[in-house]
Image 1 (cartoon, one colour):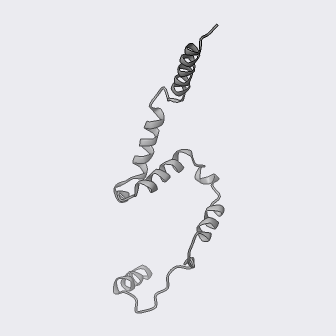
Image 2 (cartoon, rainbow, N blue to C red; image 1 turned 120 degrees about the vertical axis):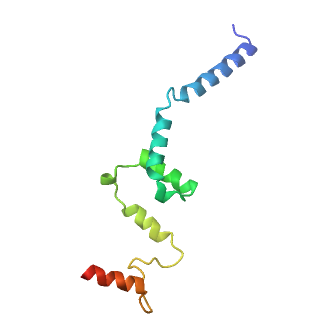
Length: 110
């Protein structure tokens, strides 16, 4: 017959074994995560906030393939989350066009 001290000891060992079973035996998952992070955080995207980078890495690792992703729900959520009106048609110029932009338009048409 087990004494109460022995059962407490066995419960502690059981809890330790459960914790050990959750630890990955290899570093492959971490390496994949760092590899994805390096693909996302390029020289042009060095100012990403931690939360944005973490979200992009998680989507890249665990999210659906781009060809399988249906953006409808995300777009609806984006529309609904706005405090005001979303500018879906782009911004309109109300004054004179900037010289740099006008020069670019002329060179593109020629």
